[in-house]
Length: 258
Image (tube, rainbow, N blue to C red; front, top):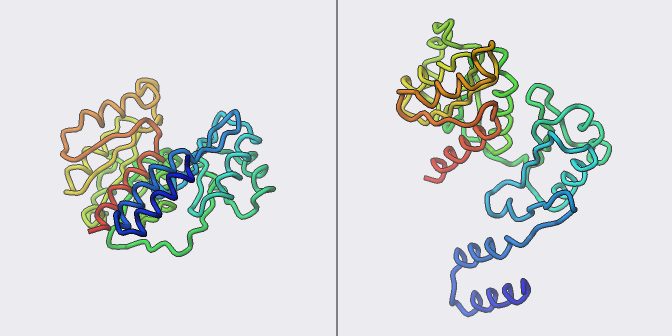
């Protein structure tokens, strides 16, 4: 069925019935069936074509053998950068025996392969990541490395929470020049509202599970961010640095197309 559809498309294109853009869109739809099944996982090899980046692996909860099988499959059948989030050093060592060029970032807990060396990262379309405290760095670094591997120019301002708000104001020019901002904060989660009031650009707030008992493992920061009165603040899940990095990248890429 796949071959019949492809032949039909080629004939229509050759005869001038459809444009290059139309054939590209139809090929993306045909590729929805490009799934490799392993019993414990179904690897979506068409995601790179549809979304511009290969499937990303959530490593937590997977055995090192399962992770290796999925990562190796993506390595062999994709061309873009590869990411496995929430990994550990043991899984990295096991996987590196098969794919020695991968790297492991201990802070963000990400295994990754940066193989697209020709990506142009536009410094004029910067994603700025702000973290309230040093304890928020694992989530902030997950967002930073994700956005970078997705092809963006990324800069950071860390340990600039509202308990010492003068530290934030020292970076006001960076905040106002950024194209998209990611704000990572635990405890009371107030930093997102402050930053949201200082810029006319999109702010993606990431609550973290950092805090004492009444923070309820990030729920207090999540609710504070959801209740922000600052315009243009959107919120992702608790500790979801990866999700923030991808969202910021998609927003940034929209402006790059203009």
